[in-house]
Image (cartoon, rainbow, N blue to C red; front, side):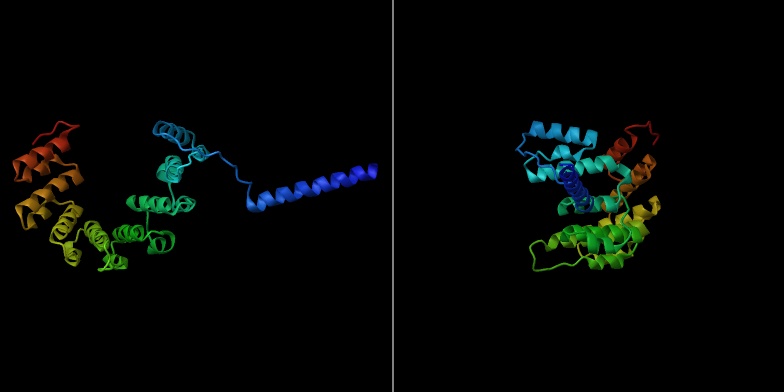
Length: 256
């Protein structure tokens, strides 16, 4: 009898050891959630609780895939805040939201290499926007050439716009409108030249704009960029000038 007990205990030990080893290698077994379609009010409640507690498992009962992934994405962004890193983005299993996360880093000026766009971003439009962010960060217009445009495609205009915005981003970052010559669309080319002027931080740079409309737009955006209401005085259109003063002076008492 004593020998049987010893053998039984040994078997149990082996089983427990195997289970622990399995968990260590493969991770703990996944929890099965009973999923159900949720109403708008329920969804809001779940989102609020999940982000408040930082517990993305609260999102799991949501049956609708997009809502569930949105919930988990919000939890991550809420928890990480300004400390968000590329490593955090790579933990996201949904490719669309992973791309969104990486592009958020680009918006914050934290994408520093084209390899991130090439290797870590899945969506083609997202990859193009990634290159645009990196080009602005590195002040290198040549990076914009990575944005390929298939002229026969119905969405060619989207990639053309992203590529033009890429040149515009470099123009603003370098305060040099020479790269705007790569833009064929006249309106976007003018916008690029305005951004180059705004990037210089010098209101006098707006004087070289070819039309009164583009000069006024330049002065307006310069006032916003510098937070300087006095620049609004250079705007020739009275309505735009008043709007400029209102937007710049909403929280302060300004002297014109």
